[in-house]
Amino acid sequence: MTGLRVIETVDYHAAGEPFRIVTAGLPPVAGDTVAERRAIALGAGGTATAPRPGPLDEVRQLLTREPRGHAGMYGGFVVPPDDSEAHLGVLFWHKDGYSTACGHGTIALGAWAVDSGLVAAPEDGTARVRIDVPSGRVSAAVHREAGRTTAVTFRNVPTAVSARGLAVATSRGTVSVDLAHSGACYASVSATALGLTVGLADLPELTAVAREIRAALAAEPATRHATDPRLSGVYGVILHEDLPDTPEGPSQRNVTVFADGQIDRSPCGSGTSARLALLAAEGRLAAGDVLRHESVIGTVFTGRLAGEHRDGVITEVTGTAHRTGEHRFVLDPHDMLGTGFLL
Image (cartoon, rainbow, N blue to C red; front, side, top):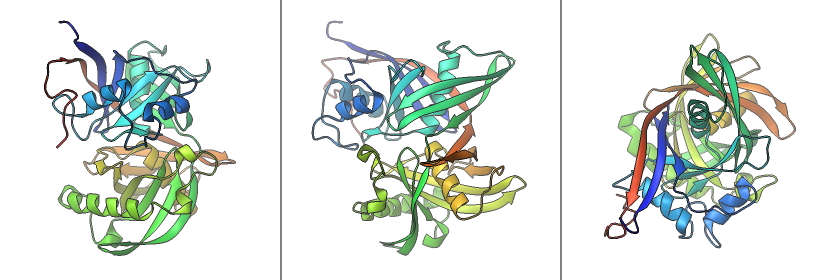
């Protein structure tokens, strides 16, 4: 059919959160580094949650909007890495725009890189996939048994605590907020202090108050990244509650509300890095301890401290990723809905 646009993807979920990997059909993506490509994708005057329209952003819209996607969709454009030391680069996207970090996406990309043969892996053992993302270089250790990927461990960029105990007024009262930069800036708040529980019944209230907190922190200096202004500003609000400790360490349940009210179905990979750094700062997590981090749907990531760095702490987060489908999406130029709609 003349003028038909075709986009091919491989879809995964990591602990319930979707990750749609675009494998064919992208327009050229300008830029010399992944961070530069993200800036160009945003467009002059565009922001992370309001990119300027262009051919690349049309693909993002096509894949995150109905009838081909949905408001909770997440994914990535595979692009060249910054140099030959990494296997691939990625531009992370969601329904509102482009993010700087994504742990669950890194876990999914690690599994995909091995499953697709992009990175060689043993039948039994571990393959390490190095990935350039807008916030730096991360890696995914892909664990294999009998030729099957059983888990993936995401090693993040350094995570730094930038503020603790900020008083923020909300419609449910004033709460204490902690901030940590883990590839993106996350605000952590006790759901219990808000009179809420992290569960499906309270999800509308959790989402609403998270949006209030994010807006209230818009001018907070501690949300600014120490060296890269492109990583500044609160990306996600983590609402958490304590669960009984395990023999290995603390256990918490959380829901992360990011971008413009999007809900992470997973325990949030880079958000888990933020929680690890904050728990360490509180004296609740030591070297060798393991955080059991549960999502609002009951799926689990585990995390641990992996070392110190001049820019913070090194964290590792382990989870699973499973392929859910392979797709060939088309955009008919005569389709009156174009790239789709959001409800």
